[in-house]
Structures are given as structure tokens and as C-alpha cells.
Length: 134
Image 1 (tube, rainbow, N blue to C red):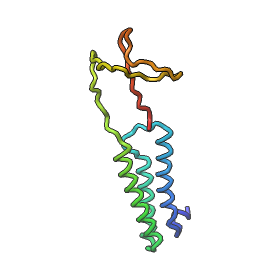
Image 2: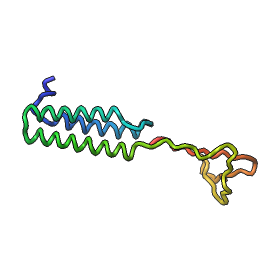
Image 3: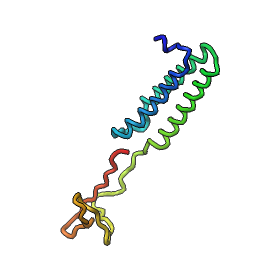
Image 4: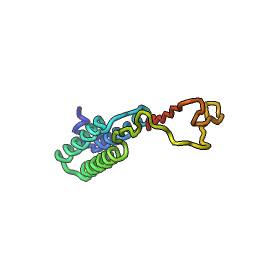
């Protein structure tokens, strides 16, 4: 545990950086459906507190720069995730019996690349919009 109290201010900055990189990697490969990324926020808080403890033990330019960079990094990450990665729950504005307006000349391509009309003349059409994950 000597590296926790090491004179090097690099460790908390590295923890903050790895936290942010792991959030981007995990949230783009695994469908994360949450409003606030608590795990990453807690890891960033640990990095900021760790950096502050290093500054409190012995104030130096390097440690103070490390504290400022972890604070700025945590603030930007928090702003970015809470502003751009959290989505409010949407309520459906469609109720039973609603009809789709007439879509003239609109078609989609099927799995083979052939055009398929959206509305069928055979009966009801179910249109499913899948958002997937970002």
C-alpha cells in the first residue's frame, strides 16, 4: 500500500483517466440503461479525495496540479454524463385504436435489399421503432 501515499501525484490522475475511459468503453459496448453512472462517479470521488490527501500531506506544485486535473476531469465527466448520457423516461403518446397517417410512397428495404412498402393493404400494420443502445 506504499503507492497510496507515494510522492507521485500520478496515481489519482491515472485512476480518474481510467475511470472515464472504462465508462466510454463499457457504455458503448454494453447497453447500460441507467440515469446516473454511480460506479464511475464514486471512483472519480475516490480519485479526487486521494489527490486531496496527497496535497494535504505535503503541498507541492505537482500534487496541486494533480488535484486540479482530477477535479476538472471529474467535473467535466459529471457534466457530460448527466447532460448527454441520461435520458428521461418518455410516456407513450399512442393509445389503443390509433391509426398511422397515410404514408404515400414510403418504403423500407428488407434484409435482401428489396423495397417493402410500410403500409400493407392486407390489413393492420405494426410499426416497431427499436432504439437499441448508443
